[in-house]
Image 1 (cartoon, helix red, strand yellow):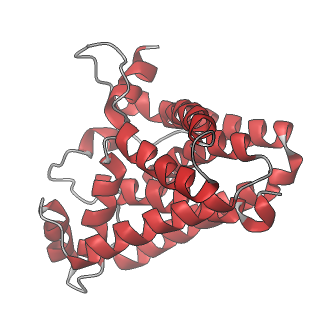
Image 2: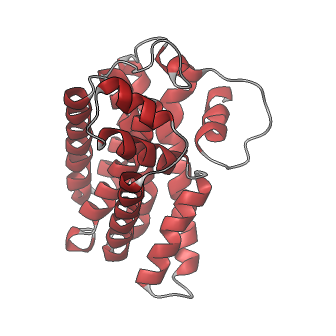
Length: 242
């Protein structure tokens, strides 16, 4: 449980005890499980919000809830990634821009767009709403594992994400992703589109990263989580979640 609690502390603001324990590679397989925990909280929050506000307003609050519970951790990565990748500069300069704590125009546009897509998606979900609100955050955190497995770390000389790449993820490290897929199929076979969308979005982002930079960074992994989450909520809204 040390790795699970460490993962909670690392990618959320949820209370998980105080500890200096930090096993970067060991906590990564637990990211989807932390996503499920976030999803349970999101579903409960949505149920409470729906008692007082209409669906569009409740959806806005849901988006804010996710941002707050994660400390905007992945959103910050999305902004930095957009500023770098869309600067149309050479690779070294892109990586340098990503390290800049300041946010540029492309970062603002990317964050606003992704949050708007999340809102549109959550607003449009009617059937299987609770189940989808629980599962999508788990899928989003699972996408990061594929990015880490498929791409080399972009700052081998040193970076905050370097410890997470000290060894390649093994097939057994994807148990959380497989559990999420199995859970979705067991509880709602109509959710096949979500699983297809998850793998397509993950593959598309990895292919784009490989073509654009040939590597990945912590910011880019955070961007993967945010884009995957937004895309899956939008897919979930097709047909009201059927």
